[in-house]
Image 1 (spheres, one colour):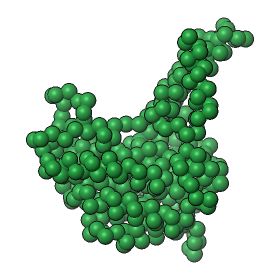
Image 2 (cartoon, rainbow, N blue to C red):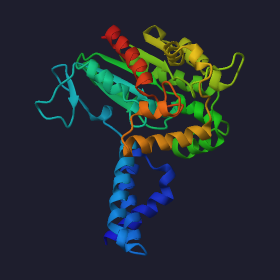
Image 3 (cartoon, rainbow, N blue to C red):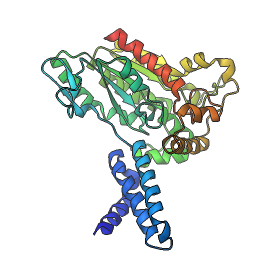
Image 4 (tube, rainbow, N blue to C red):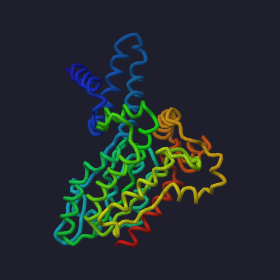
Length: 347
């Protein structure tokens, strides 16, 4: 019966794997790993079955961390005394008096990039930092999370709890625009329905919709444009999306009705100022194939071998990323400082 159940789950994973959400994948990964180990242990290499089972389970649990989805706005309880706490928190657990929702992708989740949101939380102990972020999300996916953010903002307003938002989204739009293979992946996994790859116009339109939904909810919105892809500075006159994408973020802010409440930061400029333009002249440019390989190797090194993101990035000659996209602690600290300055201003 157990083997039948495992086969059923694995068959479902193979059939629907491309469309699985992160939470379901989190549950399936260890099961699939155990199933593989069971098959191996019952055939030609019985003597190594126990070792295979242990290794497979370890790998499954490691990838469970990568696809783990943390608590969201739905897991927050707003109390009548003007405080908020996690719903599953014990009575004596800390309550917070302010709320900040971080909307983004893998640069925000902290599972394949520096966990700068946790750093912001530790420096602002009275602010509840909530992640509404998923690995691989496009800007259009962030819009779908606006309703539950709105509902939490409504409850906070009713209890006089200060509320703010931080938005860092768009890196995957850039990746989809540079790689046909990745574009197809976003079509299957993230619902990109257009025939063509993302453009400046589609990115700007999605960002405007997101800002119009989030900005009116609280005391302010920190709007961060991603650091870009690769660490090499764009060539003057290059009109590609990879070089010109900051224009879409500036245009989105200009089109927003409540732009006075937006604090906009260009992270690519911040990173360049930190490292120095002279150093970045010979920096590593972006390549979709290199990025895919580097990301997989980075995840294996970090979660299975214990290497830090900084060590991985340094081994590749990178300054503030470890795989040309995801941040090390150097890049993460830049984002954290921007967020801290913003929270100090609005709260």
